[in-house]
Length: 393
Image (cartoon, rainbow, N blue to C red; front, side, top):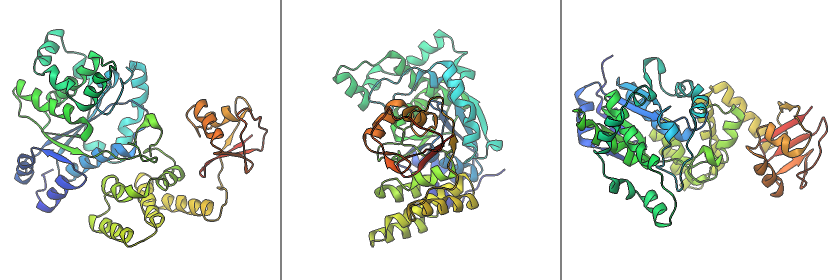
């Protein structure tokens, strides 16, 4: 397949949802030349689910793919064990190989919801990291300054307050940089929080007599609670969410990020997004624009018919105060409220269940409950918030 060199498409690729390009003039020249580029994205399997915060670099990969460039999708089964500290204010726990293996089972399939996996080069970085000798690791480490690492804002902050920073964390940028060498990347995609790691590839490649890659960095996306979207905070909209969950979660995002979601997490034409932004400034109800967003995302990850049904269910529940028609059944291992909430996967832990009950966010048979030790019986309907229901059998 030959590459496309349409200047308008190249400009949108370089600007839509992009915070910084290094080096922009060089990358633009290569794109206009028709040269087929190797475009790299690596994702560590730190949790089983990809969320739409991850869709930002994946959609940018798809933009490159649609212009005819070669994608290289790296599953970080080696780097995932080490853990990237780029966006963390504390040390990221080191994962076991077993945890990483379990988490990454469906990563390629999930990425395939956005990019054409059949035309993509899929790699696992244990393939090369497990073969490196201590001598080569020492030589790689010599390409970098420890001063550069500790001057990163989050690392400097931790050191200033006396929080532990492990030498393991300092290894991560070297590993990500070497990934670019291993796959001979021309371009690497990533978030602004990964700037140091992305630049590591530009440092490492000339040491291996390769041309330094260009970098395309996108912004980070807020989750349903307004904080950075993160699996550890439980504020994610996941690729594999049910249509009802995906639609409902979209409807809970803060009003001030609706346009950002449209721009970063969809490929709705920018002219249409500008119309939505104008309507909001003119006093349109944010709920109405948010419903368009929820429908767009749900249809993208499922299909239009399913998205339409999810919207119908949402309207029935929230405007008409009805319960959904398809409340899931559960036979819990113990008939107490906390256990049931956890086993129904309405909450992620018993402490979260107790917190939701204390905050009066849980109902049993339409009555708010305050007793975490409440015993349940078959036929009881448990509700958390406005969207989560389960029926006891």
